[in-house]
Length: 331
Image 1 (cartoon, rainbow, N blue to C red):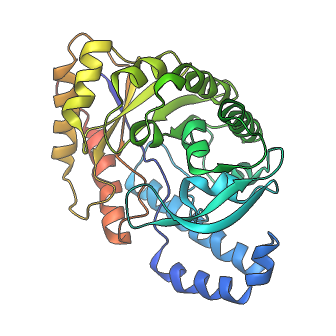
Image 2 (spheres, helix red, strand yellow):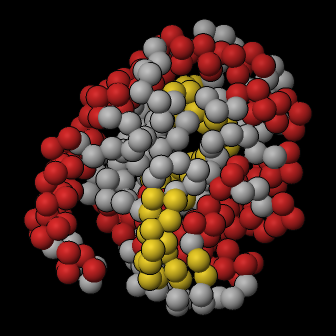
């Protein structure tokens, strides 16, 4: 029987109290923010919010705890948006939804900022429970504009090296989720082998279990084959958006020894019951009888910042309760 581990892909909604308070502080510190200085008051507010979401994950009983990425106003583009070699310009649509981010334009050589490491350092949990969250290199390159490297392949390699450098600065952690929606929304096609190598670069920098987590659909067969060549511990499957196609990929081409399954909807306020979550794990295992998964990461299918706080918290509870009960069938 697979070991079911309850976790999330991070990017949480701000606690209700923090929305107005942070907006007010950002308005009063606009000039400091432009220069990259958040100021003590803003930092303290984020610290308080981070502690609150970490405590809420522990209260729910999640097996892995994320930092929450509450500072990531630019969503997955955040690691570039805070880099000195990047200019943030106009507002652009974040994938195909009603969220927007500042376009990160790379104008110089990318190097590590230590921003993500500092966030993880501030999380007060044991390393065996800690989970890091980053975009995969292909998705981050897809969200950005290159005005420095001048070549798509060179730019992807530079982004991968940058993310690897960020990972090496992080504290010890058990798991690293690389969020990879662009692998679904903009399949890499002939660049698949290079994408696999870029993922290898980031995964190789992590002393942790590395989960590559595509979502908003299923990978093309070619993309699926290429990412399986990457040195990852688990590949993710969005069972909310495209369950049948994701199951087909595993049935036809196999998968990693461990898998991550998107079992609750990160964009819909309907809260799934723990029974529903368990049934989705069972459905996937029954449909892949030739696979023997060591670990199933039970998670939301997308980032969670889309949800109202009460619905987000209810989904944490459902994931944790389902994982504690475990699936009732063996693969």
